Image (tube, rainbow, N blue to C red; front, side, top):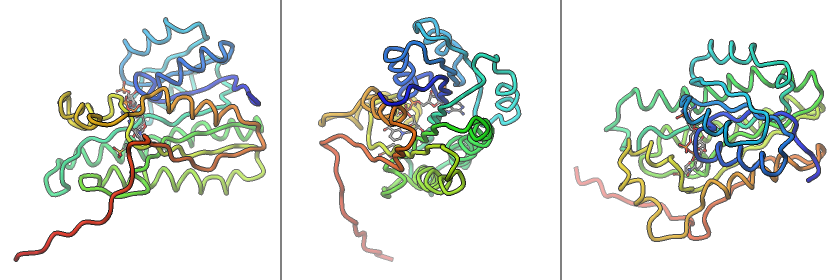
Length: 256
Ligand code: NDP
Ligand code: 8X3
């Protein structure tokens, strides 16, 4: 461990990668303070109770920009000097064909995955610049690098995250801020339950018949990135199950 983060803000800490990372940080570095966010208050309270770390929770929807701004302004003094931001809150609201989806589902992905992430970054980055250091890790996805049917807006939002992360680096060059886009493949979390709107058997089907990754695999990757020395920036990193790989283009003949 070359760098020990002192205050980490994790969005979407109520399940999956966010929760696993909070637990891992707490285990590896109990003196690191945690700010955990998400919409589900009961989960945040439970996680905060479980952890030995000093923890501040913010029950918030990342798309409620005024509330997020307010919550940040009201962070207790001892948690204010955030040196690590994990922009993890995100979702795929559907896996259906674009011609067969509700617009609300499409807009939700843009609001959470793109606007929520940009807003949070815009709020937190100035403090890092002022304090002359920080780490921002954004949860992109392989979905931002490769296309698949039913991916449409989700893939688009993650392409944004992957690209935004790298481009932002140009603006913080010389300011001792590290920025990384983490781009996982299929990882078994609540992600697919959300995508299939609570249909557990469809969600399970995504992870059947191969060795899956779980949230701890990704949490360990995030921990590795944030604990690198300040002079070492991981621009982007793609991880996926060994049993997942590429597929080719496909054809469908137009029959009129
Ligand atoms: P989970 O569904 O387990 O976790 C998603 C987290 O995001 C939850 O804590 C949820 O909290 C939070 N969240 C969702 N919407 C909002 C919102 N409007 N406001 C605040 N928080 C919100 O999924 P993962 O842990 O798998 O996903 C984490 C990130 O990783 C996402 O950005 C996802 O796109 C990305 N990813 C996931 C992959 C996978 O295969 N699992 C692969 C590649 C990337 P709550 O519901 O309490 O608000
Ligand atoms: C989630 C991974 O492959 O379901 O971002 O799009 S995938």
